[in-house]
Length: 165
Image 1 (cartoon, rainbow, N blue to C red):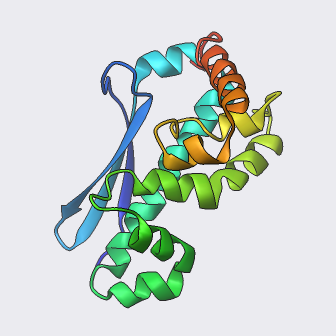
Image 2: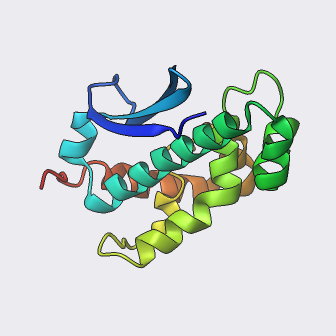
């Protein structure tokens, strides 16, 4: 099995979508493409762009982990126990289980990275939820007031003026 390769493409992926990560088999390896909507790049703040790139990189890492464990599912359980638990316990079809994994396992990492960089914003917690609005965690871990506050903050960040440099 070869190591997955990653590619970044700037592509119009559809109205309302900030970005998408797609994995496809190539030979005996996996190619991971991350597509970013140019409208998002042209309008969002650097902090929002950084948050969405981290979100998509986490999708890529989840895809890579699953690819590596494909030949032996016990490897996923052994090497990524928290990820395995979310995967096993998420209801079928497992359409959005990646978002549950990101929400429950990796949001704190997004907050930490944003806080430690020049992309620090006034509400890194809100930005850590970018792309997770349809998740069960968004609906269950936050109360209505907090969801509205975070949603308004993110909407302002994605219309802030662009990250074109």
